[in-house]
Image (cartoon, rainbow, N blue to C red):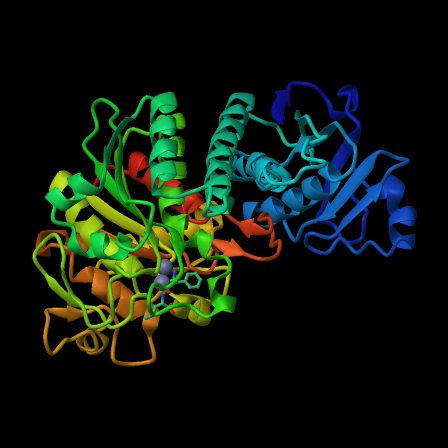
Length: 491
Ligand code: BES
Ligand code: ZN
Ligand code: ZN
């Protein structure tokens, strides 16, 4: 599906359908006044994301609370989703700006088109082809505002690159576990690296043994699919800022011997969402040509049961020598990440270290399905990430505060730390505090943990997101990196 920007008035552009965003609930805007009676009769109230298709007039209207990106992105995505489920081959729409000189809305528009049209059809035997081939954005602004065409074009390109990366992540996450195991994760990473001209290094089981990653190896042991450690790097010239992103890539999480109940096991193919987001982010930063050195690390592992499975009561030794008492094999993500964080810190001296993981059900309980939990020791970078999420990219995020009392709940009688806490409460935070144990003293202030368990995979459509994987983490982290590129690195 192509998105084109055409320097022409809307009426001079040919398309099967015209998409109109309606902010004025009285339907008096010039773009819809002509249809006011029909829309009223059809009880169209222009509520946020409310869609009405008028086939005879070849128009599709969608309500939006405002022209801000946070409203226009889900509205346009929803309208595109409806239109693309019909036989229309092309759609046109105007340029929308919330105010002069601000191209955020246009970027959101371009993102919305690709995000809305996404549908995971790989395993459908019928109707796999997308009818919609082209969406055309006219240079005519919806409210007649003057536009800086070059700036708009750049914003559209950014929106396209970002959303293509989100859709890549969605495809990875949605792929069933029998067709997507650690070796495949490594292959996909290699493929992306070669098309994007990135470096890529893969460790197999014996390389991982040499690295002494005892925690990751224990989680991987009972699977017939051996683990992989993936390191992809993007190294533009003349950069001072370096960032490492580490993703939890559990291609399946059965829970291990602390087996998940069947209802909780379905959807656990999505436990690779952090790793999949890392691949998407690497593609996005490279296509956006960001002047920041970015290192992506993925611990790709399958958590299974078997005669050689790791057990509750085992004591593991992580890469940095820390001993871990296992009390629940379903708290495996933190074990994999512990070794991955050690590896990333040894390999790269980064200014920022960010991990992404579908780490805890507790985060979903606390924040609900749609919000990322952000944790860390540095309020300033937490705030930067909250801005990148809630304001810049409109991926919702909230801070979960660390505290010294919860830290004690991970104490072990026989090892350095336990892999679960001794309290039922605050599970997202105690998981974050477990990871903190593996962050070197000199890096404590540089690190952020993003728990994406809520938004990564949802079994219904929401806003710009389809059923299944949302590609959570790609937009927020890409925006965070973009912002670093704009503002000089501060120590
Ligand atoms: N992958 C799960 C967390 C998860 C749950 C992600 C729901 C997405 C949706 C993780 O490995 C896990 O099982 N965590 C346990 C930790 C517990 C044993 C301390 C959990 O959250 O129940
Ligand atoms: Zn688990
Ligand atoms: Zn897991």
